[in-house]
Length: 352
Image (tube, rainbow, N blue to C red; front, side):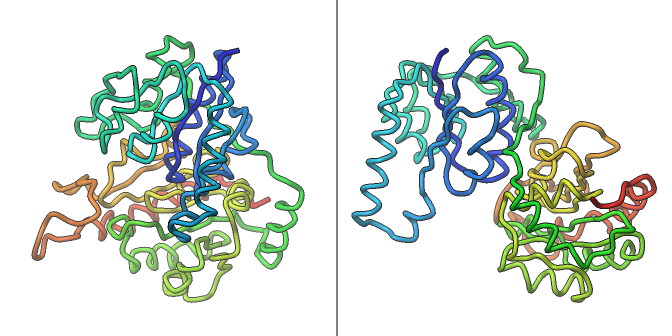
């Protein structure tokens, strides 16, 4: 069995998008080791597609800066990678931080995109041409799958998401968090926040959706501690708010009980798609739906934007000025989302 190193450190959504690649590698007889940061470790560790997960504590280093502890962490990862003697290393992060580890891992074959950012292509001894990104028409899952195609592997047209098993402890925790919810209606989880400002849909649009669907389902809100204020505004403090109460493993169990998950282009939306059970409605503002949206059954997975001329710009800062600036966050019309949810709830199962 050949050993292969997959380097995808972050973000959560991008880690999710690499799982199908890891499954193809495994199904073709490779032993997959995955170098990942804190943002994705709970998705990679104990994942059936992965033989071994190695944690690169990037968030810890950012917090503690230069220290003896950081040096010891660095050396530990360096030593662990070197002893594996990988046959192949693949860099799907394509940034300077992944370039470092490609150079240090001592793999015989180091495969990179020749268009990688921050000189990351210098980390490889084999460079491949990625699928065209024109108009952002190729989904990230299939961009990453180009590595498997380059290796001549079978099954590259098969998208398989696998996730770590859920513990009894996690199930009990979600039971407790949802103990006061109405189990007679389908559960809809709304995760309205993400990291980019321009990915956030207008909070008043969210409010209109909530007001329209609240009597037809059991609403649950999810997010981080920092999302509480936003969720309070959207929900009016009338529904179950799990902001700051769940981790990624908890999200896997929570989403497995939902009839639908509503979110912007975010880690939550991508996790929900990987779970496979709930319908997913993902609302796109500045980023491209075709590249990052949930895909598959078009009656279950929806990637919606306002179809403005400026979309997608795929930038953190709006390039427009004046009245045209940041208009993408106001679309699509809330009624479009309401109609989709209503159609889904007609045949939805009750929460588990």
